[in-house]
Amino acid sequence: MTTVISHLSALRAIRRARRAYSALPWDAIDDEQQTQALVGCVPNKDAIDFAALAILDAWSEDDSERLDLFVASGSNRRPDGRLLQHTITAPLPQGAIMHIEADIYATSPAMTAMLCSKNESVAKTLMLLMELLGTYSLPPEATYPIAYDDTWPEANSFETMDDLDCQGDQPTPEKQAETRYEQAHYKCEPATTIEELEAVARFAKSSSYASFRTAIKLARAGSASPAESLMFAVLGAPMRFGGFGCCSLPMGGLLLNYRIDFDTLAVNMSSGIPYAICDLYCPAAGVDNEYNGIGHELQNARIHDGNRNNGLKAMGIHVLVINRDQMKDLVALEAFAQTMHRLAGVRFRYRIKGYRKRQAAWLNTLRAGIGLAPV
Image 1 (spheres, rainbow, N blue to C red):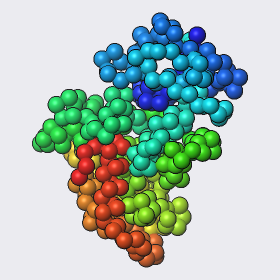
Image 2: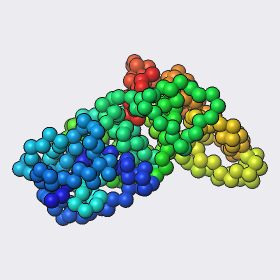
Image 3: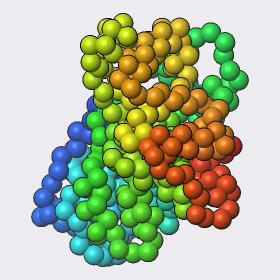
């Protein structure tokens, strides 16, 4: 017997694996193995190793959530209150299922994203895709709260994150939780690619997956934190969604974590820094948008940022710093977008009605996609 986890259970396992191993150590399988895994998934009583699944973070005995399983057909279903059993009648695309360990399989990151996007908004789906394409992972514990539009983490349950050791004046517990969480890196390799997502999108023809197909067109690889994904999606998305349209600017629009090598003058201006990695670079405008989160407020970080920005200025690049409060301020964000359009020689112009209401809805839904409260 085999076990094929899917949907939110697979997403939890993906997040756990990326955080534990800095990459997804699962194995790809061919179409024949994929079919055999599905046919063998018959969840008879005691056929599922819940202890092993708990170690993989696919399931927790403490949760009230049921385990998501893929089965080949309705005849493979078994009555069990611990399970949510799913079937897809059409042949699955190549690479839809991966092997984790003995007799345990899971839907691939691209397939999992498709399944989790069913009847979901474009904005929340986009934030999931940015995570899977990026070099960071949210914690497994955030999966169900985000799926149910709850805030994560709650201030009273927040644990300090080692990679963002805040010093000095402490904000309120609620703000501390948010500011640390939105920059949780847990650096890891991307879990999927645009090409893999597009292959799954060709399979996902149902209207239930319209958001998935749309979000793939908006997504980009290379984000290094939830905050960067949020900044990209707000500034870059087309105005009809509620973004500020900067991805439509020439020369690629907006590029995530783009490296700029310094010339001799810039190296000297930066006190020896050889290059800069731009959070969100707009080539047409020559603008580096930097998210100034809690880690940049430390003394050493401020000194480094000042030297780095001097080097970028020597290269003729404008540095625009967006802080946490400005990421909640639509008027401020509009000013950043207008500046990039002006420097790129492109007129900034709204062609839709009710744009501010649309922008507020887009921003809040994006925030919900990483567990943050609305503004």
